[in-house]
Length: 389
Ligand code: NZQ
Ligand code: ZN
Image (cartoon, rainbow, N blue to C red):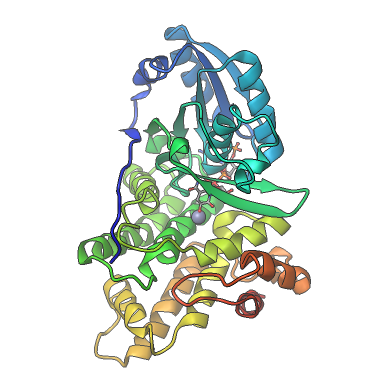
């Protein structure tokens, strides 16, 4: 177990009818607000009007950036940055899913940098300062509402990278599960696959010794998603289901489950190449990759962790041989992702062939070895992509 520092400073308002606090929260940072959102869902679900009412009541001056793409582009960050500089924005309000929140976080930092915002993502230039960011979450998936990460794409270079910096941590997040009632079955499934992957990819399958307490919470987050995602898909307005998924998304990647571990995210690195080259939905890419990655890395040296996963999460008979439990656990996960959530199970089904696997593997490893439970070379990564065809 490694030493760690844990600090999560995001103030969370959870539940319906809490937007009456929006004005007072924003006002502590100033009067000029940049409201950011995606392709218009917030207008369709009536959230835009509610937010605007609150901003008007609080006498705030509002500017807007709309059209933030899923897998947000650095060029959109640059647009937002220009508005912030020109209009002397005091605070940013992101209303949407992970893409809108991530884009907004980078706008906040890019406002204090004169060059291309992509330089911040690639660490060519450091983040030195950022405007405060508040969020209203509309999709349970990434955890961006309660963490200091942002993932941005550059479609000119087919690159997608994450940046983590404490200055990107949202100050205040409004988590109202009813704002996710309109999320489609497909996006609910993808978001759920993403939450699961944050647990598996980052720390459940990690060489560091874990605290039992943290590991049990991880298993409970996994079980919560397995229980509630199918309910949310069948009954989109089931409050219990939406609330459980929303809080699970925030806690899967707000730093708590990573305490004591080393930060690795091999499936995320492999997935970011899929999104960078093919613009596919993050959670779908993870769903396709994760069981194959598990099959690929499973061996005698790590079978005990897979066994624990099988017994504690899926209730597999502990008397079976270890390897059998491990294999059953992986097939139970595949069954959940592809049968219960209805996600496509292969890259071919989403129109991806092996043309770019070599270069994607090279980029995922960033010229070295992809760290994780079992370090992966470029050849390993290419083999895993092939297993997904
Ligand atoms: O654009 P709008 O109109 O908002 O529609 C979105 C979008 O089409 C729609 N949607 C959002 N809320 C909805 C809704 N549709 C109906 N009802 C609602 N209430 O869903 C679509 C996908 O939205 P997006 O924000 O892209 O999804 P998600 O939250 O999954 O975010 C994915 C992005 O986050 C990054 C991913 O790589 C990807 O770029 N990640 C960010 C992380 C972080 N900051 O910590 C970690 C993650 O691992 C991930 O990499
Ligand atoms: Zn993710």
